[in-house]
Image (tube, rainbow, N blue to C red):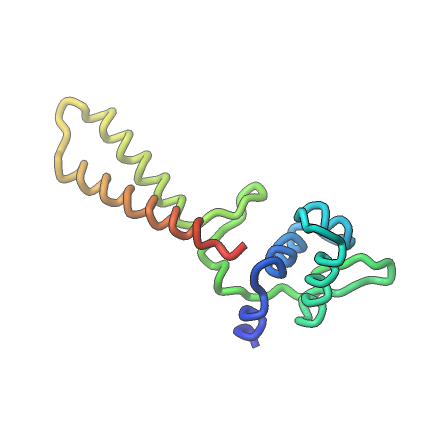
Length: 139
């Protein structure tokens, strides 16, 4: 059933689910305010949709909480750092860019063209892929 959940978990519903993963319990107005929805009914609609999927439950005080974590393959390429969700490839992009800059600074007098080209290509590919993933993010 993961494919069924993943196919239904899109757009604002996914946005609400990701928001809920970061918070213990939330109310409708809190979701509406923090996600800047036009009205509480929009937030309520998406919360009820998550309840129908079995991912969220509602307590006796009207607070919503995550009852089941979904295994979403669409999010495997991303990682949460300090509250920000970024592509995993960004670490490789930063590593190869740092390597390139360090190599240029330390070997300014005698740069090996092969090492320079390798570092430039690797850095470019990882930055390209990181930016591509960021632009295609599902949240």
